[in-house]
Amino acid sequence: MSVLVYTESENGKFKKNAFEVASYAHEVAQKMGTTATAVSFNASENESLGNYGISKVLNIKNDELKTFNAKAFAAAIQEAAAKEGAKVLILSSSADTKYVAPLLAGHLKAGYIPNVIAAPESINPFTVKRTTFSNKGFALSEITTDVKIVGVSNNAFGSIENKVATTIEDFSPTLNASHFSTKSVEIDKVVGKATIADADVVVSGGRGLKGPENWGMIEELAEVLGAATACSKPVSDLGWRPHGEHVGQTGKPVASNLYIAIGISGAIQHLAGVSSSKVKVVINNDPEAPFFKAADYGIVGDAFEVVPSLIEKLKEFKAQNA
Amino acid sequence: MKILVCISNVPDTTSKINFTEGDTKFDTNGVQFIINPNDEFGLTRAMWFKEKQNAVVHIATVGGANVEPTMRKALAIGADEAIRVNADPTDGFFVAEQLAAIIKDGAYDLVIAGRESIDYNGGMVPGIIASILDMNFVNTCIKLEVEGTEATAVREIDGGKEKIATTLPLIIGGQKGLVEESDLRIPNMRGIMMARQKKLSVIEPIAAIHATKDTKFEKPAAKGSVKLVTSVDELIDLLHNEAKAI
Image (tube, chains in turn green, red):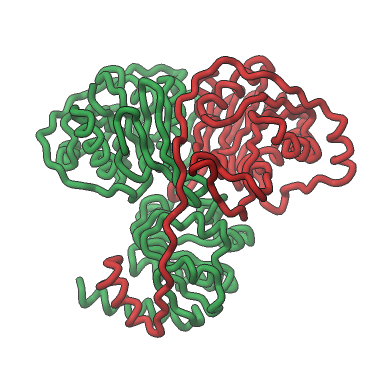
């Protein structure tokens, strides 16, 4: 009756969140007095999961599953859960896992709690803490079904090393044409840059930047910090930046270690979207901007003077601390 | 094409969130309720299918009589009929089972739901419906075209987007991008008057499991005051030595 965790990978490499959910699964397994098993798709270096407490890896090698397909992945994870007799399934909070998890919940008649920010408060009843009301509140939520599915918020639990012996077992789920009734035709993805979903640092710009032509300094600051770029809602509404960068209640949530808001006043909907970030920095020329009340550090000043200076100083800092 | 748009009744995005009854219930005092924004993008896209492809558009909501003003607004925007399941929508699995029963009975070709509600943020209802009814499913959908029984959707992925080909019957978890914010419709007087005459059926819930329950709520701890700095050197020093963020 192990705990099963879906460890995401891309081009054969585990994503950062794979080690976080593995760590979480190990913690849950320990609380339940059992072990954690991972199901991985076309990943190399499966043994690295042993560093994060995974005792067994079900290793799927299947060319049809090289591109993510929610229905097929859900069927494979479901079969893995049945094979392991898993009563608790752990997933991340990526776009792909939030696509898969409800399908699993429906098939397994399982309660699913997403946006979980801590290890279970209790196993019986199975109770977890999660964010609600778009990060304006927290809920203690109980899963009352036999099988339980937990979606762990990015950066909430962290990757915790717990080295255990790992066995790797090839696993071939039974799939048929019906599992591929939705087909990926084209993927348009920025390669080599951090995404908002798993970035440690996010640099975000607002209407205070006056126009899309001024985004060069946001991108440069993000590059220096290895950060993802983001924006406020008005900016995406104006078409200065793509919808995918819109942070806030009706956009993307950000749970980075560092969030730098430049020229963003801090509407309540935006603040809800970033409240899970650990350290928030605001650069704004309006000292009355509401974001200053929600920030840890702030500079009242003109972004067009502060940001270039910050870029130069950070480059010096990086060179000294390399 | 017969379309069902699933509507969730949620607090306005500007609402202050408070809890009551020993922090076990959301305090609705003074809260304005609206159509869930993700559902509103879907409803507007459904209106496009109605106007361009003669689709019939129904809406469905799980909730008490208090959700009817929100449903009437959706009817005023242009939906043809509404169905309310007379039950408290406290659990995503329960809600999905109610909506799945309606979809099965109504033989809908396309079901549009928001990717998540902005209150409980479960994000599970469309996916659970898809698994119950074995429908094709596209989540975080930002574009949707339908020709006959063929559908092309674009979904948002981490760091980009993915184009997907599939067929009806289809359910999507939609969001901003399905239509532009500027295309969202404000009901006009004629729409409001017509909405009063449109059919709003109230049905009792089917037997279904409650898979989860919220036992307690809390608000985030109060934030300490901001540390204002006057130079970027000071900021870098604080981020490195105090916050350990760089």
